[in-house]
Length: 185
Image (tube, rainbow, N blue to C red):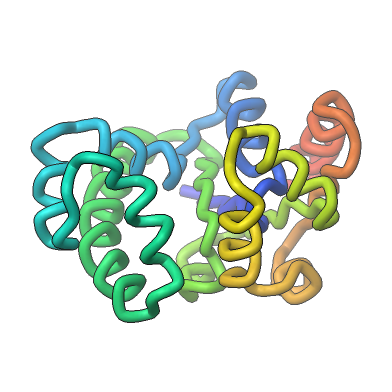
């Protein structure tokens, strides 16, 4: 199975990339989507929040507030990552016969996961565009800055990746760049 990791910094267009290629019929596994489903499931959310010592009420805001605390970050990762990896493994088994399989991995380089993939694709977008996209989602500027500062700089990710897809234009532009990329993989 050819495993393609799609990564990029906050607001770069990873989700749009995955949505588009999924619509083309490629198999895709999204870390963000899996995590969202974990929190939507009330039993799983309860287990996660108990381990993090957080209440169900306003838990998203509490997590965002606590992200600046490195000890909390480690605890969050120790809680979420095992659940995320087990779900990914289950989903990946369903896609074993598909070629290639695309994985959306926001923290591919930050978590040293790049060796698990045959190909890495970096979705590149300038900081101003990324910030505007995130703000348009209703997220605060402080959250953008926090998450952006936690991620490895774009030029380093670009140099480490097999391919780079630029996303500083329209969605149509991104889609054309993805089609060009697919011809190379």
